[in-house]
Amino acid sequence: MKKLFLLAAMVGVALTGCMKNEVYVPKCETPISFEVANYVAQTRAEGAFDTTKTFGVNAWSHDAAGTEVQMMTNETIAYADSKWTTATPYYWPINGTVDFIAYYPTTVAPEIVYDYNGADTYTYDNYTVADVDLMYADKAVRFSANVNTYGFDGVPTLFHHALAKVNFQVKNAYPAETATGANTTYEIVVDKITLNTHHTGSVTLENAGTNDASRGTWSVANNVWTPNGGSTTPLTWTSDVNLADDSVVAYDEKTQYVLPQILADDVTVEVVYTVTQKQDGTTISVKQYTPTAIKLNTMGLTSWEMNKNITYTISIIAKSNQIFFDPAVEDWAPATGATTIE
Image (cartoon, rainbow, N blue to C red; front, side, top):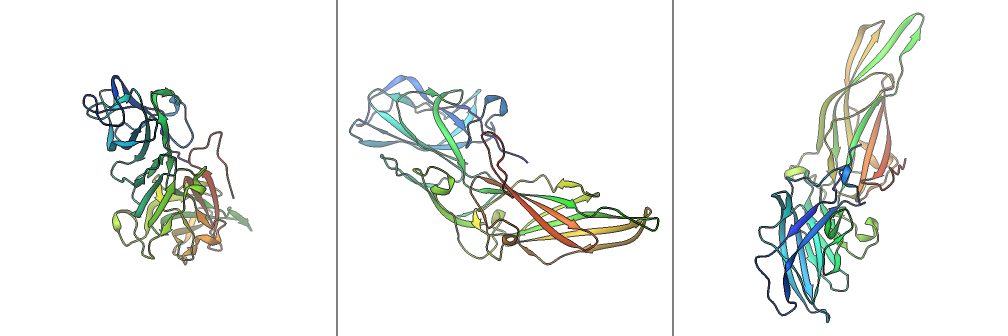
């Protein structure tokens, strides 16, 4: 199962010269840097933030009385000259502190309501899921200098996944049989898997939440399938996966981000597969099957949650043409290993 790792990467951000305003007096010596980590901090050896990607940052500076000014507004952080930076640098203030909120990607900026005392919110309104890992970061509070938390000097920036992921595995659950000297085998080719799910929704996430579940809940915007790019067709995986007896094969390598949601009756999956029956190696029948769409809420899971990676193992019993599901869920980036729920 694939996991997306965002590692500590130093990100420099800045502003031309020294900013001057009524809130703080900056010093033009130490530029503000960021260090980025995924939901659970990873080690440097496990990977690096993709240098082809960018993310956005907002920042507010304030003095001892709490008087604030927005110091950065949707600043784009990109990789250049072996470092993560904006075009020009920002510097740490001499007599004030700075709060930071980051998000990914820069093209999907949430509406952020900043609160000095920590009641910040991040809102995605009528967001249509695309092939991108939508993320929001914990607020970095009251910083006045770079620190080293994830292996780099900078403001610790801890991202959370705002979506869920769905993957499929398929299995031939019927073994070869022998009767009166004839060896009968059933070979299965899974031709297509179609997922009918809601892909447009809204959420307001609260910075003060202690975990993903307490931060906020997505609401489905409407009853129209609106997957990637606003298409009105369901999500479809198309791949010829050949299954031998009792084998389990990952279906397609595509990672599909999905809207976190309660699995209503209209969230279904359809599986198209072909069964070839052979006797002593000789084909005696070939038939394609398109069973009725199956409600996913009858398969052990009742919802998809933020930051969860869901894998459905589809077991096909070729002789009876019956399909079973064995769903499993794990944290997107577990600290000490996968937590599996079946």
